Amino acid sequence: MSAKWGLRGLAFGYLGLLLLAPVGMIFYKTFEHGLGPPIEAMTSPDALHAIWLTLLMVAVAVPLNTIFGVGCALLLVRHRWRGNALIDGVINLPFAISPIVIGLSLFLLYGNDGWFGPTLASWGIQVLFSTPGMILASIFVSLPFVVREVVPVLQEIGTEQEQAASTLGADGRQTFWRITLPAIRWGVAYGVVLTTARVLGEFGAVTIVSGSISGETETLPLFVAKSFEQFNEEAAYAGAIVLALLALTVLLLMSIGGRKAQSTKEGS
Amino acid sequence: MGVGLGRGMVVLYLSLIVMLPLAAVVDESLAGGVGAFWDSVAGSQSMAALKLTVICSLVVVAINAVFGTIIAWVLVRDEFPGKGAVNALIDLPFALPTIVAGLTLLTLYGADSPIGLDIAFTRVAIVVALCFITLPFVTRAVQPLLMEMDREMEEAATSLGAGGFTVFRRIVFPNLLPGILAGVMLAFSRALGEYGSLILISGNIPFDTEVSSVFIRSQIESGHAEGAAAVSVVLLALSLAMLIAVSLFSRKRARK
Image 1 (cartoon, rainbow over the protein chains, first blue to last red):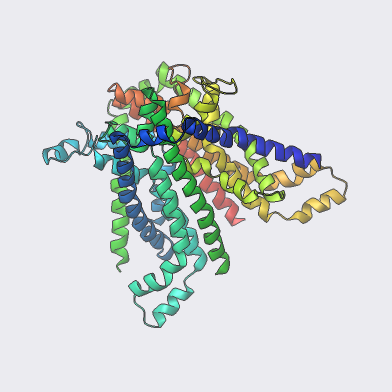
Image 2: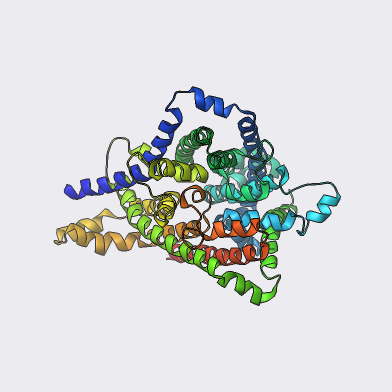
């Protein structure tokens, strides 16, 4: 029995010191003087703009990567092709690359001396240090999640129901909306949650391409970093709490979504 | 729906979002020739940063290999109230933005530490932050293996007189090793490139606490895109090697 308590102690101790205590501490620091200061800090024009811009990133990057992810997963699982292995490898790349390197890559493509920068500038399109560049960075970093979640579900459910539907005269579109999508919906949902979490919190890549101009190209994570560096700790903590609460929501959705995805797999 | 059209769209999307930008990095790193590439990588500051990054990442994955396995064990084999909540908590580092992770660690282990433990701007801080960020990998890789594992083998060993530690060393550990290794490689790949959780807590002191990603950032800001690209290519190659190893490894296991 002592071994059991020893292992429990090690596991809980590690989780407590590394995860729980620091997260608890930041909640304490933020609300040390009541609700007033953090609310005030989060309703400043710069903070509100940062929240709005962060939500804009999510609103653009998540739907794009979801549509791409579902389509790409269908192609990878349902249609054999020589190029599939390569596509599969490329999709995993964003997981292997430092966010800073992703930022640098966009900088080299769309900067003033970049491959596309000068041409786009002559058309009056500014990508770097403005919203389009930040959106590209957000799409890049969060690209793999939906594909990764949907592929195993598609493999699991097999093609019997889809074949039955097409035997009964359903066309490709009907089969997808009536049979395939309902079967993979929890996998998709889980992927969407992970994508959202990644986009909400992205820091490194966005930091390079945005220029971090307050009230213009500053997302919430950038706002937190800048506030802290400018010794405005109240704003930094308040921004961090907003992000942490979003993360906790994500965590809740993940544990529900994960369970549902698991039960669809087992149920089929 | 045309499969060919779909394929074309997928390839186009991946090219525009991922491949072209990465090609630009590789191209820039070689802009001055192979000699210049090597000079940038082997420069004393960039080499110090690379060494620090690799050593810290190795230390971190070793720590998380041990604790990740213990946590997985407790979550699978032990019963206690609130197990579901603890299990969900493991994913917190994946959900929490990295900058928030750094800031939370700083509130507890920084200059204003309420427990008098100030590790800010030291290498220890880098290790702690990376431990936080990579915590889920080993646990999540080991958990399914533990659940699948046949308890009969352990019972047989025990009935033949093996002690708890022998059972672990001879039966449990060999069965979990593939999961531990896969988790370790993913964690290592992640740790190599980490940036957000480190900038506030590491102090970014060149030759002391400056990791490669921070070095790349400073190179970009001082207008040395070529040097930044060269170090990026090295980081890229290291992480890629890890990911390829993981996928070869899991394919081999699947074939068994």
